[in-house]
Length: 324
Ligand SMILES: [Zn+2]
Image 1 (cartoon, helix red, strand yellow):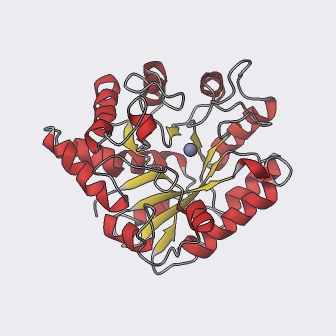
Image 2 (cartoon, rainbow, N blue to C red; image 1 turned 135 degrees about the horizontal axis):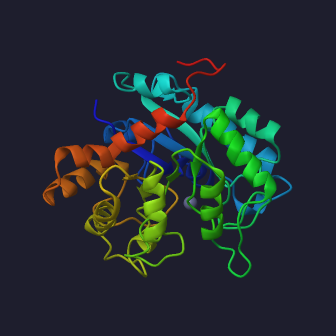
Image 3 (cartoon, rainbow, N blue to C red; image 1 turned 180 degrees about the vertical axis):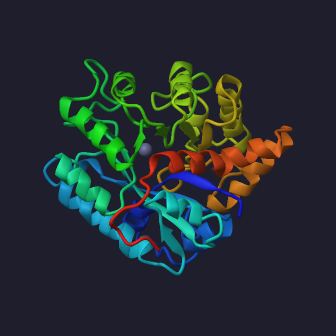
C-alpha cells in the first residue's frame, strides 16, 4: 500500500469543541473517519493539544482526558485503526488495511517528571513537542520573545528519556534557542511535525534554512503545514496548494527529498489553501508535485515514506503493551 502519513491533525480537539461526530462524514472541519479512510491515510498523528486555560495546574488531568478521548474515539476502534507503538506496527501497516494511529503531545506541561513521561509512553504516546507557544517547566515556546531561552535541566532529562524509550521529538513550536540546545543534548532523528520554510514565509512558526539543514543532517524531516498564514506572508484566500508545494520545493533544493513530509494541521486551522480543503485532497497534493515533473520516488517519499523510515529508526522494537 502507498504510504501516506500526516504528522499533525487536531481533530480530537475539534470534535470536542464543535460537538462533531467523528464516525460520520462532516460538512465542516477537515478530518473524520470516513474522510480519513477516503484519503488513503496509512498513519495519522492525532495531536493531543492541551489548551492554554488548563496550564499549569490542571495540565495533567486534562492531558489524560484528551488521551482518553484518543483511545475511546480512535485507538480502541480496532476495526478501523491500528495504534502504532513499535517498529513492528509500522511494518505491519505495509499490508494491514487499517489506519495507523499515533497520539502526540503538543506542549508537555503535563510531563512533570520522568515517571509521568514513562506513564505517557505506556499509554501509547510516541511523539512529543515540549512546548506550544508559551514557556513551561521544560523549555520556552516560540512565542516567548525577549529572554527566550533553551531547555531547562528537566527538559534535557526528558529529551534523554524520550530517546531511551523511543518517543519521537517534535521541534514545531519550540523557541529557536531551544531548537539549538536540543541538538546539543540529543542524537536521534527528529521532526518538525507542522512547520514551513521561513525563507518563503516569515511566520515565527516556520524554520530558517539553518534549522532545515540541521533537521536533515540528523536524518529527520519537516512536515508541511497548510495554515495559510504559515504558507504565504499574511495568509488569505489567495493561498493555494501550489504555494504549499513551493515550500517542499525549497526544502528539496536545500537538503534533497528525504527530509520533507506532510504535517497538515487539519482541524487546527480556520481556513485551508485552495485545493487542500480537507484530508481527502492529499491526492491532489501528490498530483501537484507530479505536475512539477518530480519523480514518483520523490513524491512517495514526501507523501509518507520519509516518515515510515524515521519511525522505523526511532520507535521501540517492542513494548509491554499489547500490539495489535
Ligand atoms: Zn500547532
